Image 1 (cartoon, rainbow, N blue to C red):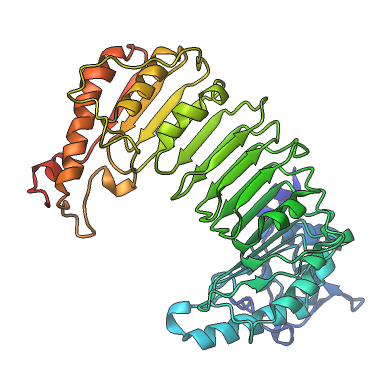
Image 2 (cartoon, helix red, strand yellow):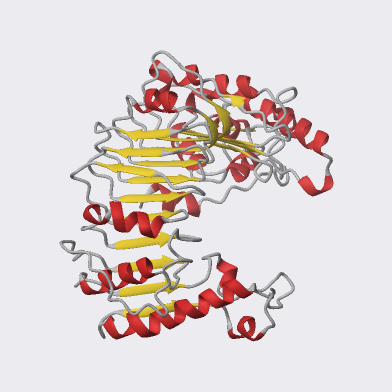
Length: 455
């Protein structure tokens, strides 16, 4: 029987009443030892070696492990070796609704201080600090990280939020040399990057940076030794103007870049990247290596359909799932296919025989959009599902309702374009769709159409 199954069968019953239900109870409040005849502390459960108890504790949620530590000193020793620390309001038993912000900060700080003071931090494998009321004048975040980051740590999350929007100057030097050698997962938000000598996270396989103050050169320095990186996510990192994913990132499979407002260029040389997602308010110049074989490709910015037709078709021949989202196209108002008697233009020399799923969000009657759709249908023998979304793609836009459940009045120009888009689908797209392909057309609900539109 595996240790995990055995741990579920163990019944830990304290002799002196129930354990405290909060994580932050001090050691002095724990019950007395349950002693054997020889006077040695004994656990009230089965007689097992201490390393086995430590393993059992590691399988428990943090709150349960902390409560169990109040049963005996032997269990307390296992709690001190608990490897997965999650410091957030819920895990620490805090009710944010019943406290003022200052009290929340003080309680959070005191409880984390107490846990780390009585913990054998050399045993920590995962550390999560999530606090949306972070105050650098009260919280001893530098001290917490200095205490908890040891050569055995494997996962680290520091997710902050402050009223002042001041970025926390993350102490990257703590991850230099031996301390960072086993880290596999790193997630930071509302932090700043500072150059560090000796930073070599050679085991890092997943990196998530949200609202991190980092420049293009600093990002290049950070990625220099990430040979094991497999997944990378960037969101709201607004100081990056150019993102380069170098060739030595041989293991990189997934790259997601969202709302980095200053980003103008993305250069991808990582040869095995198969899943790429980008979303922004402005067009980005995408430079791709010659051997890239995307399986999933998702881009969203104004003008992306025209950009894809002009620049990306030769790089998408291996794509299985394609999503293009555009709120407006440069040619939309000037070259609607409705009323156009000229023939559809052809895009010679590009087949996409691995593409299975295509979703175009913000589909319109623009001639370039219709031409791209027809090109995909005619040159994709593997196509299984085609979704054409005439709304903006927001979940509530497929049925445009407000919070009261009533349909919203829509602007005249929006309804007119939706009507043109639906007519273009019926006239030019539907006749070309083979019977093996499922065609999904998304439009505002009937009630939205029937309302008197806004001018």
